Image 1 (cartoon, rainbow, N blue to C red):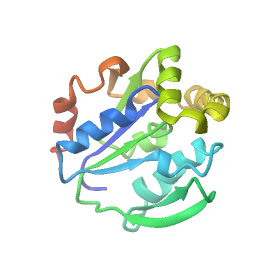
Image 2: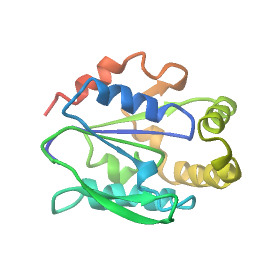
Image 3: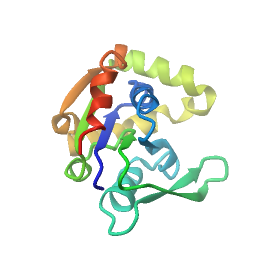
Length: 175
């Protein structure tokens, strides 16, 4: 990737997606990849992180990713990325050590557990509730192994993720 790459990581419900959308909304040339579209099912946090690395960040060919269809439980269509356009990758698992080595900037979004859970369940409702513990365990294992907050260039407070959005958007303008 020649253009700037911004990784946004944090636990479920912390505000990663809201931050990423706000950044991309003001940067019309920017591309957004959500790890939610890469995870191959509820047990796929580590796989999604590896897909981001292998297919998007470290690829020797044009970067691309294949959407996971949560309804059918199978991979769906491919999406090509332009290596000359800025890229934002958001989701738990984005800020692994390997991914960070290939990105321009990393952000960790922090928020307390109780508020994160209430946000996530309000957002996704009944579809997420039965999987909360399984997903939280994967997050915990990833955080223990990769320590993504330590690889972040900035920690963002999940209570108001858009407070400094112009600062983060400006990162996409740098070569």
